[in-house]
Image (cartoon, rainbow, N blue to C red; front, side, top):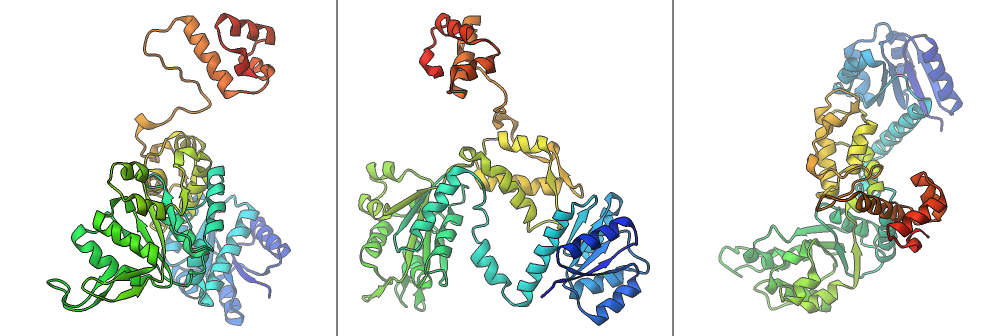
Length: 452
């Protein structure tokens, strides 16, 4: 069935070009130049989308625009002077706006996305689609470490193996757990996440295993624990390194026997859950120091995945930034872009807080940039002391006043490390001949084999 578009705008060349391009792409386009004509077209047949151009067509009012947005997705196209009008249209319920000059491919992509989302919503499939297809929303990127991680998850998710997720704080370990659950046969069941840092030790056993009435003072009635709540699904134990020692022993029993017992009960219950755990701590070291049960660690180590720090997968930074800009969830629906200078700053920063910190920086940048369509360096809130020098430059560090020969030797060694290929490549980078390179290697006592 052909998608239909009502194009409401002037009768200029841009208006005609947009209509012609959309028709070539297979859309049924009704182009009108008056609000009254748009009303008649709407009365005859409901379009899949209204494409509204600014300056508004004759007799198009704010009241009319608000009425249209209540029944149809509305995409606004405007020039720089019309941004305030487009923002007002968003406040009235318009879906999105694009700023001229508009790339016709980008316009067609926006139209396709808006129509598809509206169709899912009308069919009552929107939330199911979001949960099943968009749950791993932070697992976006193009880096090799991320590709290897996703391949490992696809391999382990269909099994019942216990998974231990390792990684620094903020790398997205919970998103990894969501992806495991989403790809598993338990996807239709619940995913229950437990923050092992937030529960006090005195309540942990009761919350995890549940309790019977009268099990302790204040236990006025039976309460199912988190294991029971996750029945048929996945139990995610975040920061398992913080688990109290008495609970470690009881969790080990659950992993070994698939059974548990409510606090105050003498009856064993079946644990119908898959357990996924995560930590940013060194569990091996903790086990050696007696801070974590060695036998529990063996059980958790059935399948281990490590999420690389963001500084070790910088190829994911730009895709993540684009993802956050397209799906802010907290701001005005303004499509922003990041300038080249600002993007380079983001790429040079070492991100000790990982993906979580990147998201926070992008959120603040969207707010600080206001109605501007471009995020520049002044909108970024990065600690300057921890910005990594660009890899395009060279930094040599000495703990003393170096001699010229020391500087030459250090620089030559750096270039050899960066370009481990043929000697001709190294000589070309240095701007010298190969014979001169050999002489430098000999004079500075640098191993010539290092340049092979």
